[in-house]
Length: 465
Image 1 (cartoon, rainbow, N blue to C red):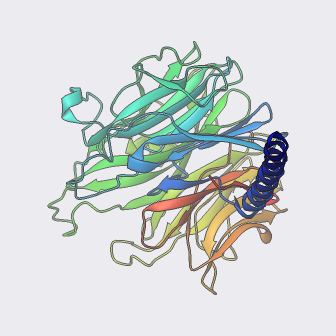
Image 2: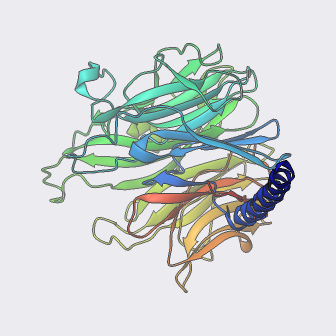
């Protein structure tokens, strides 16, 4: 009897080992089959954009990415380029937007996160604002709208798994743009309220633990001759050395009931401007190094900082970079009045300063679409662009110029999809060649997007979660 039990036990063990082995093989096959070329499938709405930036940063072998997830909350993921390991995405905070099912505009999209890593290794994000609400108090620098500008920081250095909120920036922000200078100073740029508000920055000299009061650099004010108010859309980035560079266009914020335009308030923007902030001297200046009085008014912007007057067409989303000599290259999307022609896509126009004057390049070869610019030398320029091709493909590609932007040739195609579309981030800060830009792919029938991390070898894949 004992002998039979032993034999049965041995048979059972072999059977169990065989089953486990089969499960292991099946599991390995499933893992192999479940590799996908996106790193997350919960991007929400316009999950990334050029204006809220940077959306990613490369630091000590790891690329960290931030995007708008479910209920407009911020999410952060990371990719280790040596170990090929993904972490996250983790929810890094709670936005005050995206939670009201009765709101007419279901997805606001203005509170997407910007990300930064300080010199102590802590990760910061700014998110959640579209001007703030009246319940938050008086806005001395503008008007109110929705949400709340929030600053969150990782609880441990280089750890994206747990976060805390620091109540140390104005709640009235939107379009957050983070910068860190070589000396460790942190600047948070944003619009201090809704359309009729100043653009400001707050500065931190202690790794983002405290910030100074908002400093206005672009002024909103009532127009005397028409029923409208001056407003702005700047894009802020690092220049050379201690400089911060700003490309911006002008938004004529018309009244809702308007004698000049019966359509009332529409997203009308014009012109292209450029200026520089020397963070060591705290002096603002134009491209000719002439000092500027802050906050800049429309009249002074036209006189001192105008790159190109664009009066008949509409503009959208300026971008800028400088060559090693400090000469700027500035781009702006230009196209028809979208209030009249919703299908009127815009094309990037490229301008460069030759030391004496602005030169306008004919970029008609570039496809219509949004993107970011990288200036390597006085003659080598690349534009990273999302566009739609004639055969119903949407793609993310790089266009290269070797004559200062006078002509372009299509280079790498990072991602291409048929019958789809993309939202695109600005270039990742200090980007690794394998991870230059973040992209959300539009999906039919849903507000969610697959999120991609793209570099010279295409998307970085991961095991489907």
